[in-house]
Length: 272
Image (tube, rainbow, N blue to C red; front, top):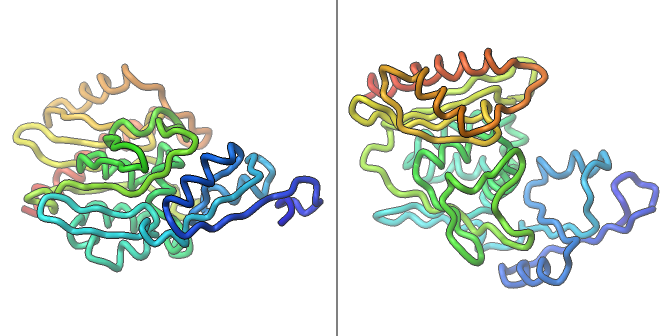
């Protein structure tokens, strides 16, 4: 296999291991190896010559990464599950806000390819799924450790994962009232389902547990009094950098976050 540009200058290797053990070994043996799942995020910069990769390691044949385990206390979702499959399976009914977030991802074609693990590892600060999983208190399980979802992203397209670390899946605690968690999003009307900002909320007495994506350099979570959301948002902003966006000003996105938080809270209360 040659380079994506087609000039034959850079050889590009391709591997498709069948087990997690083979996958981990390939990454450990080759520092230039790059994981690829659905390819929705990696292929475009690769084809444009903006991403350096000499060895693509495809995870699609690793059956263990497509596991879904529903227990009494938690739901485990394998990293290799694509969004469309999750929406057709039992997870959608058990985690309705997570399912709603997945429905807002791109187009049907994108959801047919995009995987949960790929979304988490890519760490787009606008991504819907990681943000909702944060509010659920999810834990990311890799081949070597467990990482709270809230601490996985460390900046735009950056995570605390080691280069050769493999996401196996996500463990999501089962909440007694999953329908109380609500999702809301503002889409860029000129894009194929690209988010501007999105939020998830869960009422907590006179406060709300909230999560926000698309405003700061990473998705964030907090608990805020309902009566002072603006002040609480200012406090959150003190600890993170604003996300740069040449098309939507920070002021505009901030105002939309407050609108979405109030809408999602109203929907949660009305739905009870």
